[in-house]
Amino acid sequence: MVAGTGLDAEASYYANWQNSDSIMDVTHLPVDIFDLLQAESAFLGKVAYAEQFTAVVELGCHVGWGLLAAKILSLQYVGVDINRRAIGVLNKRISAECLTEGSVGLCGDLRSADTWSRIESRVDLNNGALAYLPFNFIGTTRDPVRILRHLATKGCSAAVISAFNTTPMAIRVREQYYKNCGVRNVRFHRNRYGGTTFIGDGDFWSHSFSEEGLVNIVHEAGLLVEDIRTTELGIMLLVSVDITRLPPSTMFSSTQVP
Image (cartoon, rainbow, N blue to C red; front, side, top):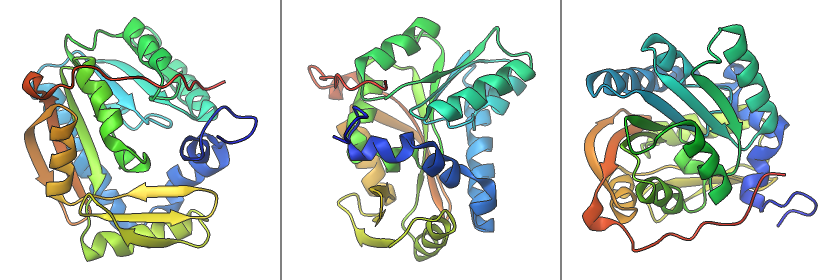
């Protein structure tokens, strides 16, 4: 645990608004990443429209990657992030765009049962809700299966997951990106997901995945892959709950954001 925060090191890096803002600052993004973000946004919009979802629940939203798609499609929107300042910016944006009736940003730790209860108070996860894990959010958790199991055990209708690929180009672009963000002592190693894990000072941590590795953790979490798209930089999945793979129970952490 990080003294005085109630958070472990993994959560504390992104809960720090300076770190989070730097990671999400568009001026720090190498040009190649914009192609991935456009592909991700198009995939989200296509899925939400084709399957007639009524809500988007964005996990690890920062200031709202998925809000525009929800707005265009007239969908309810709930964005969740551990960074309180980012959620403040998101809610101001929601207010400025006159979307307060159907949209909200929530500050919370997705490893906490309390956070999931607050999400469920806003939207029915079992009926028309599309979860959205944007821009390698799943790669910023030390145990990605745990977050995905929460989706499975909550019976979420479906989820769009976007993650970094593990091609040589993706490794090069990610290394430049993290250095642009001011992460010091950046280095990387191969991980058990067939991808590359970058680490740096200040407990910075970010996974990427091979296509097979990402599919495997999705299955391990009790989710079923419905569609998959890949680029040199990224992997995008549409997943749904597979009840034959659900674990008997999932224990939530009592960790909460103060």
